[in-house]
Length: 504
Image (cartoon, rainbow, N blue to C red; front, side, top):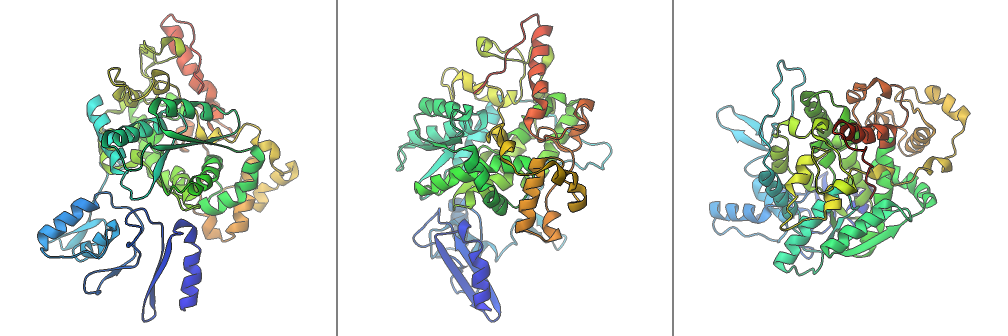
């Protein structure tokens, strides 16, 4: 039995390459593969309480573990901790409450600790939507706290920096904190990946120079990306097209990051879901549907971008932390009246290089941009802060499909070979074939989402525009015209020439 448990545990060793631990009691086993971010010298697991009557193995950082220890010591004077690891606190907490719950003496039941207020009961009538007025300072401070909280580390760390709005804001806040506190790690490391000549590389370098980070730029070829696809699918466990496209560059980059001795990175996932930053949100018919779609996207995030952020990095033993999905920050951002998040063409919601200082309206993620638009002490250059969205998922290149080996005949037979969640393009067919090779069980296939999608939309939002019917490409390229026309229409309405989309 022990050898079987060891074999199973080894399957996860890429996620915890620093140490392996096991505890056996009778025919029961606890096994752990550790990635040491906090207390690398003495925080090995499984962990025990003082008299070794409770044993725990746990995966996850506890960002406020210092405060928790102080609370435990106040309640239990004289208590001693065996390690400086944040996870050891759970040995004490489990004596009081199950994870994520508290006990109600009134009902005699466990109560879930956090029920997001922004989630909607889609069956309830009438639904209640957020109405909190937008406050730029409150939003900015909430995000700064979220980023700084995730900088807790006893090992070198960095930030993934594509040069887009989201990753640049994360990098700006982290860089400020390091400079302010004269960090022992010196300058912040930043990392960017792309095909040679890609806009991400240029934009990432520009932001890194502005922030003064120690910047690392990695290149890959289309063929190198194609060669990695099988490994990528194995690690992220999906055949979703946009997730695989986005995960491939991150997978390749994570290997090089780990080779530099970095174990933890900050990343910008989640912002588009919270603020409606995807291209298709320009077609939201009203603020209620806009907010409902952001909620749907957040609820499904674990099926898409969270796979990329978690598994493509952890394939190489690198932990990615995502400040935009912080619980406290979500409570602030998702409580804002969704009307504040929508593009407003009537106010000239467009921007180009000529008008970056005179933006008259709301472009996508306007309230996030405005919160960090502080000319007296700029977080980012104007041309970065107000740059329109470029999609990381297209970073693999437009000629990606040219390297795929799927014939017309194979695609025609897709319905017969894959009757459930049938692939509709050669690219999707190829990914599905690789996935089935790694995970032939039907249960594995059923974990992968399906249905129509436009520019990463949910199936519900794909119905917003009749022109999207029959679309085969789920990426942002499918509705690029929607994105551009939103600004062109606004400009013309205000008597201005149609603006050009800013490229990174």
